[in-house]
Amino acid sequence: MGCLLKFNNVVKIYGSDSVALDNVSLEINEGEFVSVIGPSGSGKTTFLRSINKLIPITKGEIYLDGENISDKKGRALRMCRRKIGMVFQNYNLVYRLSVIQNVLHGRLGYMTGLKGILGRYSEKDKKTAVDILGELGLQDLIYNRASDLSGGQKQRVGIARSIMQNPQLLLCDEPIASLDPSSSKVIMDMLYSMIKKRNIACIVNLHQVDVAKKYSTRIIGLSKGKIVFDGKPEELTDNMIEKIYGTSLDNLMLGGNEDA
Image (tube, rainbow, N blue to C red; front, side, top):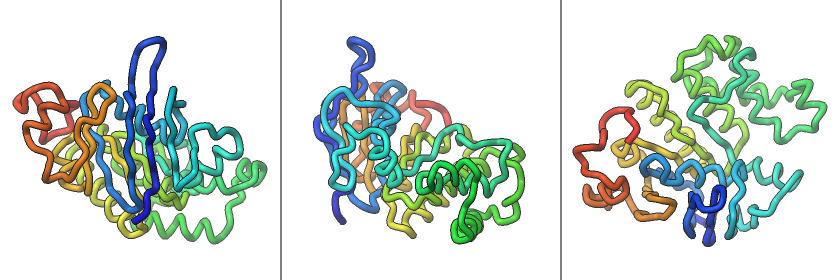
């Protein structure tokens, strides 16, 4: 397993003094499933969104597949973003379009402007989209409008769109925060299976510590923009969880979908 993503002393400051990432350094290898946990305001979303430059960093370097992407702009940045898929908490679908049209949007980064605007996808892409939707149990909903789906179905479409991109790295920003426990389990099972089958590295922001322990090969704990834990799920002790969240276990909802 080679190193896919590297953070080298990354700092992100909002405004004049709000430090969201405080000298973060780490490496993530191909095929790893990494969960990032921490309280609200710990820097989880900033960490995730700095990887694909949705948020620009203040200092340091980020390397993807050996290439420094922190200063990329324009076409060079678009080429880098092909390698990075993203699954959002609020799905980020185009609700007036069909399920398969939303999934095909995963190919837009590979298309020329006009073809993309006109939605001229290849037959190969269409077949791949149908196959991925089949894997996610959505084969009967291909032509349904995205607005007609349940929350869990919408998130499956979001996963399908990101897999359609054929990424090396998948970023998931609280993908189950809006879902009930039953739908959450379905989504996490499917996500895990899809990335393992394709050897895609995955970084997931989670509020649910028990979910992070169940699915991850590695857990990173953030507190006030610093990494305070980086290890295997079995190494995450109750004392360490309390240190990450700055409160006792009694105050943390470990079983449900509450924000910790």
